[in-house]
Structures are given as C-alpha cells and as structure tokens.
Length: 118
Length: 111
Image (cartoon, rainbow over all chains, first blue to last red):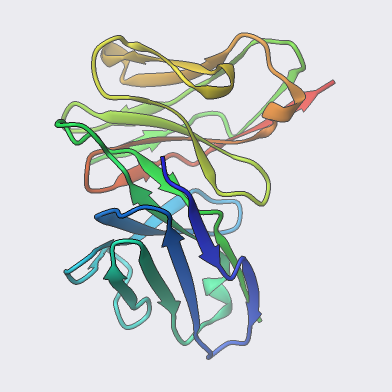
C-alpha cells in the first residue's frame, strides 16, 4: 500500500486565478495519476505523470490548462490554470504500487483537494 | 470501448441485512477489476481486486466480490451490513496504464 497526502485539502479561488495542488507519497513510485471528480460524479482521469517523462493527458484535458510536474519518485503537482466555476471539483492523485513479477496494477488514492471557484 | 456500468445509483438497506452492488464491464482483454469505497469527504479506499485465479475474492471490511466472465460482471457483496458501511462505492476496470470508473452506487444504511 501507500500513504498519500495532498495539499491543500480544500480551497476557494476566484475565477481567472491558478491553484497548484501538491501530492506526496511515502514511497517511491513510478506511476502517478491525477483525477477529477465533479460534484456527484465519478472519477475522470486527467493525466498520467511518470517521473522522467512528460505527462500524458486524456482526451479533453490539455497541458496549458492542467500543467503537471513530476520532479521525483515521491512528489507531483497539478496546476489548475485560469480557473472558472466549471473547474470546481475534487482533484485526487493516485499512485500505482503494483507489485510482483506480473506487475499487476493497484492504485491508491490521496484524500483529495476540494476546489471551489467563485 | 472500455466502460463500467453500475446500474444502481442509490441503494438503501437495513443494518444487518445482506448487500449486493452490481457492476458490469466492457473491456477488450482480461480485465483487472477493483472495488473502491469513498466515505463523505474522503478519498477512495481499495476494498478488493481481481486479477486472475479464484473468481471469488475477499476484501477488507468483510466484503467479497465474484467475477463472472460469462456475464461480464463483478458484483460486490457483504452478508451483514453495518451502519459504518454507508458510503459511495465505485467499481473500476483497467490495466497498468489507467483505471476506468463506474458512476458509483451510494449506499444508505438504516438502523
């Protein structure tokens, strides 16, 4: 398993501003993921962040809006840029700690960052 | 296309009653299947996972799930629900690159 922390836990921001969310994990992991959970909805993958390479974005998400950094194997940041009320969501990071020779996936999630844009 | 369907948006059960949450998936290869639980204001906690082998898998908190390939299903069960089980439950399917989540089932437990 993995213990994951996120900062901030919540924030209220004005439209047009940017917020950077931090994700810290207690062990070295190769694969980290950023998800968005809009109010009352399921989780949607924003991007995959592997250390040493550029983040891979899912359809509908672009780097200019959601720049991601992955400076080492225990840390990542997601920035929500030029925010609008539609960006109000919970943002969660996760890590894959798949183990064994089969390298089966096993994702653990952080507690989330609840963002409200006014 | 890869997808997960959780047909039940909201389920209400009495404490002590049995529970079954449904999950159907569409996936091109042999899937990895997961159930997560999200309590209010919390992140997601992994309940159990299926990769291969025994189709009945045991998880934490007394939950189990059964993989049925012929029905493309991975239903979650618990023989006796506790009030603390009230939460949102998500089924997910995927591989080593990403997970696809269902829309979730909200479980309400009455005393």
